[in-house]
Length: 161
Image (cartoon, rainbow, N blue to C red; front, side):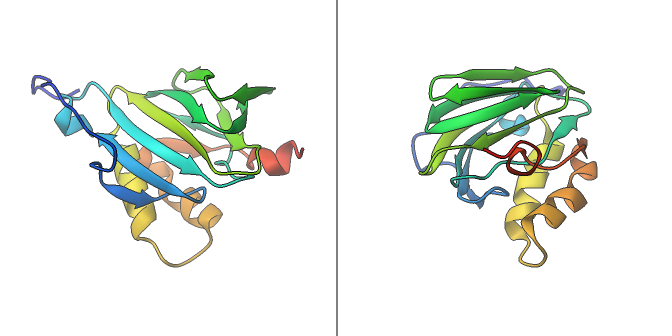
């Protein structure tokens, strides 16, 4: 956590830095740890149909996801559930999890890390800047520096629809 005091922040649609998403689509940065006094990192994400990250866990941050639009599935440890728009998904640090856009159209979600995760902020920025290798290879390569452990394949592979 930063020693800096958090200050108020308003980020309107389209004002956040746009990045390429590891699971297809785009990411709009809403808040970085340096802007929130280390309280949280926030990203609005668009995920392509059928896409989602591999099963993973975060070493030092909690993750919360609010599914804004689309149809999703989530996995917490070994439990897989449907997650339609309006579903809130909280994952404590060290808990294996993943999600998948299970619909036919792009889906949108809000992702929060608390406390702020400079590692995840850099993960998304570095992934967006990478032009070589597959998305899965790059994800796995960048994960350890972000405090993230890849534990298995995406839901599309482990639990096909």
